[in-house]
Image 1 (cartoon, one colour):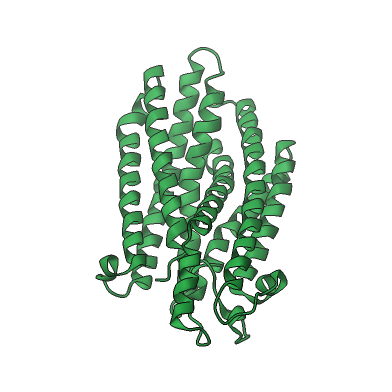
Image 2 (cartoon, rainbow, N blue to C red):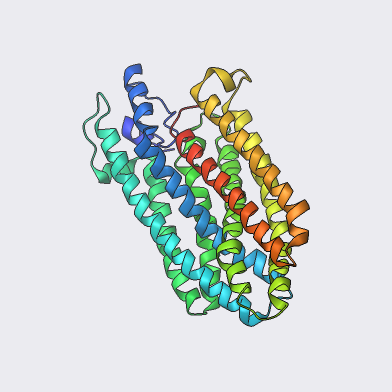
Amino acid sequence: GSASTSPIAVRGSEGNGQKQTSRSQTGVGEEEEDAASPANSLARALLFTALLAVIGVVAFRVLVLPRARTVSSELCQKMARRAAAFGLLASGVVIFVTLVRLYLEARMMGAMPGMLGPSLNQIVMQTLWGYAFMIQVAAAVLALVAFSLAVRGMRIGWTIATISAAVLAITPALGGHAASSPRFTSLLISADFLHVLGGASWLGSLLCVMLIGVPMALTTEGGDRWGNIASLVNSFSPVALGSATLVVASGILASWIHLEHLSSFWTTNYGKTLLLKLLLVGCILIIGAYNFRRVQPQVVKEEGVARLRKSAGTELAVGFLILLVTGLLTGISP
C-alpha cells in the first residue's frame, strides 16, 4: 500500500474494505453502498468481460491452436488473425470501461462524508486503486498495439500480447480486495491473479473457439470441417481442465482468507454474494463436464456440432452471470 497516511492515499477501491479511522461508520456504509451500486457493479462486470476476452484470445492462440494438429497451418494463421482482431476490439473496451470507472470512482469519492472532492490526479497518483488503474491502462494500450501487429501477421505481436495479458490478469487484484487485505496480502494477490488467469483462459478461449474457430472450420470443404472442429475442441479440453483447476483452487484459498468463519456465508452480504457465485461456478463446472463427456465425442458430425454450440452457449451464458455477480462482489467489503 501507499506510505502516505491520508485517507485518499490508503484506500483500496473495488473491495472498499480498508476502513479509514477519519471516517464515520456512516461514511463507510455509504461508500460501500456506492461501490455496490448498479452502475459501479455493471462497469466492473463489463471490465471483467473485456479482460476475459483479451486473455482468452492469447490463450486461444498460444495454448489451443498449436495443439490442433489436424488443422492446416494456413487455417490456423487465419484463425489467429481473426482472434487478434477480436483482441484489438476487447483491448479498446478495456481502456474505455477503465476510464468510465475512473469517472465513477471520482464521483463516489467526492460524495463521501468528510472528504473534499479529490481531483482525478489525486485518485490516480495517491490511491491503491489509482496504481492499478495506471497499470491496467498501460497494459491495455500495449495490448492494443500488440494485436494491431498480430493482425498483420507479425509474430512479435503475440509475444507482446502475451505479456500484456499477464499484466492485465493481475490488475483486478492490485485494485481490489486482495491488495487492501490486512492479512496474507501477497498470497491473496497471487490467488486472485491465478483466479483471473484461469477463468479467462477457460471461458475466454472457449469464446474464441465458438466465435472464431468453429465458424471458420465450417468454411472448409468436405469431411475436413468436422475433423478440424474435433481437433479444436480436443485441443481446448486440457486447457479448460487446467484452467478450471486453477479457478477452483485459487477461489477456495481466497474464500478461506476473506471469510474467517463459515457462518459468514449466511450472515454477511459478502458471504451471501460469494455463495451465489460458488453455486454458479458449480453449475458451470457441471456443464463443462457434460460437454467433455457427452458432447465432445460427437463433434465429428453435424448433429454433434449443433449440440456443442448449444451447450457451449449455455456455459458461456452462466460464465457471464458469474462475471455479473463478481462485479457486485468486488464492491462489497468482506
